[in-house]
Amino acid sequence: MYQSDTKRTVPIVSLEKRTKMARALNQIKNEFQDATIDDLPKIINLYESDDRIGVYKFVQQARKRILSYETEILRLDTMLEFERLYSDYDYICGIDEVGRGPFAGPVVAAAVILPKDLKILRLNDSKQLSAKVREELFDEITQKAIAYGIGIVSPEVIDEINILQATYEAMRKAINNLSIKPDLLLNDAVTIPGVTIKQINIIHGDARSLSISAASVIAKVTRDRMMEQYAMLYPEYSFDKNMGYGTDTHRTALKEFGATPIHRQSFIKNWL
Image 1 (tube, helix red, strand yellow):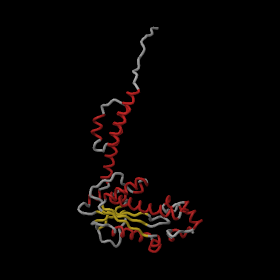
Image 2: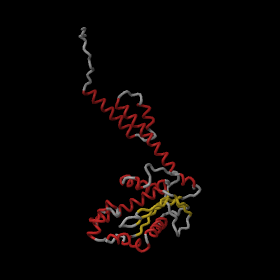
Image 3: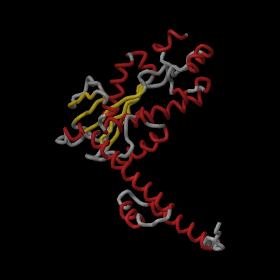
Image 4: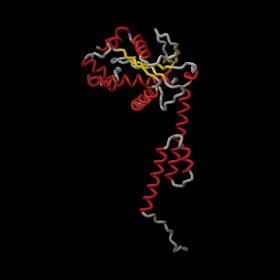
């Protein structure tokens, strides 16, 4: 059998050259990572003909990032349906509350007026978001909102007037705490009594209106922070984890230690 004496030679890449290539890839990676969504198409165009595997991956990741952004913008557009439907009103305010069902702690409502057509990425019904994202969105909403107000009603008042009336009261307080009076209220599935401002009742509004979603995040983060403070006063009840809801751990603590001053007596009487 004929056997060639010619050996295939593999190019030897020096350590210095490999280091330079790695450095170049890191620089390109940083270009992609630091680019704004508007700059990405230009950077993709610059590097899409580069035949290095690493650069190809950066380009593909950038294309996915653009697609994800465009999908998110479309989602946010659908959540501005009611704001655009009532665009003749100057100050449209979203209203939402959190804390109707817990055994302990206040009920908290928020009212938020956003600039028209403002899109805040990731903003959604607060129940669909992680605690970390809610905290980040809280800061962004409070910075960008035209105005926001918070209303808090204590467990004592909840016991006195019932949770539904306490929820309405928290919402009225939130509206009154706005620095600008709204022209229109977008509410999450309620009509608030005792309010003269025009109201629109939207079923599942926290997932359908950006203004209501913003209010849901403000209310949720505000109440969660309060419950985390209460957890330091009453560590046996794990309020920082259950936020006052009737989890097994919370119920066990109630039977062992009894009620605290922040418990709703009308909610826990069957457990004591």
